[in-house]
Length: 219
Image 1 (tube, helix red, strand yellow):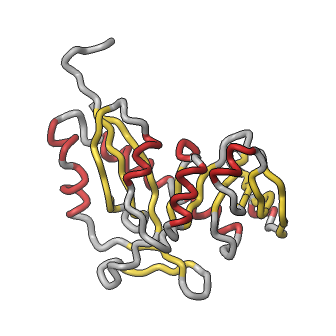
Image 2 (cartoon, rainbow, N blue to C red):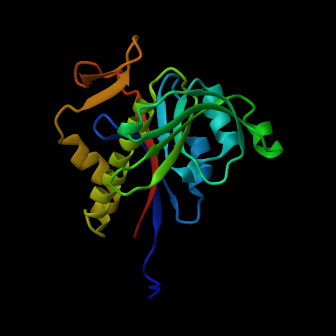
């Protein structure tokens, strides 16, 4: 039932998955498109952006790529492409393919003319297959899949915000209050050898290299 006294706002968040700790946030009216806010996110060269399929927009992905940002985004169906190269994968681990592809439709090719990394992984629990697109070609396919799996921390963060309740304090201040009381978090970033390492963020505050983008609504 519609309530005249109710108001809905959106919280657009760039979340560091080392904590998770918000590194950027903006609050807008509910009608502001989530995808449009991706243009407002600050870019930091060398950082991995992990995005759900709602942010699959090749014009905006090209902007991330041009800014030196790496991304992993869940693909929608259908996306037309041509396979340029294929690599062997560990199928018992759930991986199904690891390919270098190029977009073939005239619309998408104009917006992202370069090659993309395409990794397909099957969730053994649910039986669902996910197709992931990215612009980093040296990480293993298993690492690419793990990056996207860690995006779930973004969903847990928004669930935690919703659990704060509908009070004014719960909507306006949960990020600054509760995150400020957490102990020093850990972060994940690409090491010079191409593996993933873990560090204490208190001793290395510059290691914020893995972030997720998410939008949530609150009354």
